[in-house]
Image (cartoon, rainbow, N blue to C red; front, side, top):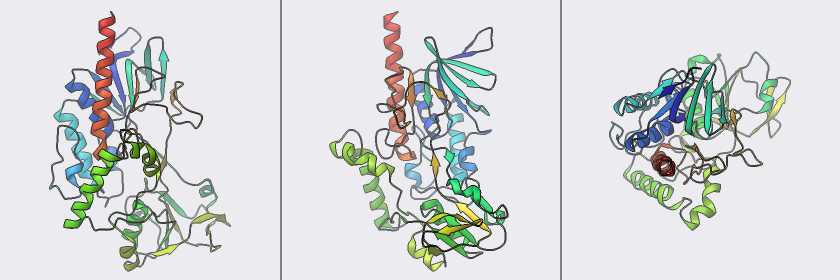
Length: 367
C-alpha cells in the first residue's frame, strides 16, 4: 500500500465487501501473492450475520459452510447458528491475515485515468482492480404501500427482526412465505396468533436431518455446483431461471407450520384505512407486521458504464469486460446456481483471483 500527498491510499486491488464472498477472493489473491485490501461497512467482520434474528441457523450443513482453506469447525451434518458463522468469518480473516478495514462504508466507485477510485466519505482508495463483493442483494425490500400502514402498527423487515420480545402485544402478520417467513412465523406462533401471507414455493421432499436427507443434499449440491452452471448446456438453458426462483421450504415446512397453529392467508394486496388488505378482500387488523419480502440490488454508487438496460451488471463469470479491472462476486448465477451462497463462493473467488493475477502478469510483460 502507498499513500500520496493528498492522503489517497494506493492498492493493487480493493475488495468492496467483507462477507464470505470478499473474504474468499481475498484468500485466493493472497495465495497468488497479490495484495488486496477489503473494505466493509460493518464495525466487525461477520456483523452481516450477527444482526440476523437470534434463532437463525444456516440452511446448509457445516460440511458446505466453510470457505477455501478452512473447513467450518462443527460436525459435518450440524447446522451452525448465525453467530457461529459470524465468528467463523472473523477467525478466517485472522487465520489468513487478510487486510480487512471495518467501518468503511463505500459511497462511490469511479474511474480516474488508468486507475479506479473508491470513496468512503473523505477517504480515497486508488487501485488497478476493484472487486464488488457486496453480494447479489443487500437492500431490504418492502412494498411501496407499507408506508400507508397506520403508524401505530409495529412493522419490521426481516432484517430488523431479532426476537419475539420486540413486538407489540397481540397478533402478527408475517408477509412472505419463503424460508425466512416460515421460520419467523413458526417462532412467533409459540407466543401469539400468527398469520403467514403469500404463496409458498414448495418444499424439499425429505427432512435434512435424516440419512435420506443427507443423500438428497449431496445430490442437490452436485447439481448446483457441477450441472446447473454456465459450463453445461442444461445449466445455460435453465440455470438463470432456477436461480431467480424462490427457494423451497427447507427446515420448517407446511406440516410444521400447520401443527404450530400458523394461519395461512392469501397475498397482501395493499393497505386500506391503515391496515393490510389481502388479495381475497379480507382486512387484517394486527398490531404487528413483519415483511419477509427479500432484498434488492443497489449499484447506484458505481459510476461506471457496466450495466445493461435493466440496470444489471454485465459480466462473464464475474469479469466485467467493458471495464478491465472491475470484477463482481456473489452475484446470482455468476457461474452456477450456488454462486450467491456459501457452497459456491469459493470456485468463483478462485476464478476471479486467477483472472486478476493473469491480467497483472500481462501488464508486467508489456512494460
